[in-house]
Length: 394
Ligand SMILES: Cc1cc2nc3c(=O)[nH]c(=O)nc-3n(C[C@H](O)[C@H](O)[C@H](O)COP(=O)(O)OP(=O)(O)OC[C@H]3O[C@@H](n4cnc5c(N)ncnc54)[C@H](O)[C@@H]3O)c2cc1C
Image 1 (spheres, rainbow, N blue to C red):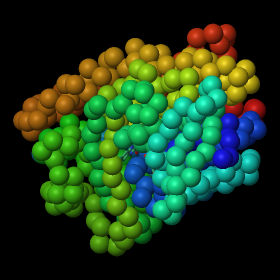
Image 2 (cartoon, rainbow, N blue to C red):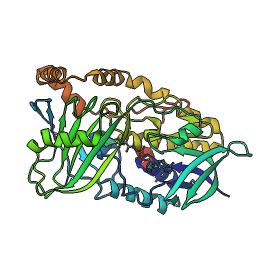
Image 3 (cartoon, rainbow, N blue to C red):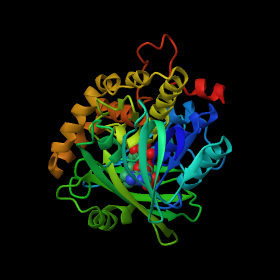
């Protein structure tokens, strides 16, 4: 049976980021994903916000054009245009980004087992080791590790096996991706408040001149994402964007956890990152910044655990550190979740058109607030979420 310092289940952005950073430190890593090709079955629009773009390096050719314009629509298609002086968003070319991160992992010695399903994990005979059951091409095999990382998404099996907290609240997102015929328009993000096609969240069009993403998101109860998307395209998107020359290339969808970071995201045998840890902003449903930021933090804790050979170090990585920062966002999420009436949304929208409302909208879309930077207990003044520490180590 092969032994690794760290086994990471899931090669989405969270798992890749963690594997990349730990491989650069010299840890022996096995990265596992049930997908055979990481460029397929992507389940994110890929919008990165300014704070992420400023704090993290992206490989060349993995980002679309900068977006400075946002239009917000009411259910009756009244609109508010918001423009920023800064580049606020960029849509990631996610397939390329995943491949590039994977290449970085492999060049630094990590092993990748694709087309491999995580089955279960249990404590080994040796103290502080975990035996992981995997299955590839119908054949079961086992590996041994000191740290098991659950980066296996919103419906994490690793969370269950490590007896950590599990996601309880999520919305569902679904979108179509078109290749644009080099639109001459300014790149723009358009968001639609509509309780019928996007109950509890938003419908969106993200058009950066290269790719057009048209999607809907909302609470799963009473919401059929595919039908809602068709309705959205008939009702609103068709009036705003011309798809005649655009080619449908992909559909994407999945759960987006919105309950705020889980409390227990680490035990002595392993930890959770990304959607598995519910590391998504409950208000904007943005999860890509936390994939990079929280995974960097997790990589630091794991690095220390491997150096000291003290498994309790992992317990410093606690969701409690973040939850306090999410209180207002969680309240806003609860309020939004209860608005199921178009008239109420229209009223709320009228508020957003006023001076104070507009400032609030600008704050939500253009503020630098993303996933919080936190300092870990017992880590002195060193900020373990700061990407530059990791950059300098590479
Ligand atoms: C439609 C949609 C649009 C979104 N748009 C945005 C956006 O624009 N901006 C933003 O910031 N956030 C967005 N989000 C949220 C964001 O995409 C997620 O938070 C983020 O991608 C989560 O990454 P992850 O690595 O944690 O999980 P995932 O990307 O889900 O990766 C998990 C990986 O684990 C693998 N896996 C799962 N189970 C097993 C198993 N048993 N064995 C082996 N492998 C397994 C899966 O194959 C997958 O590759 C969106 C989400 C959705 C659904």
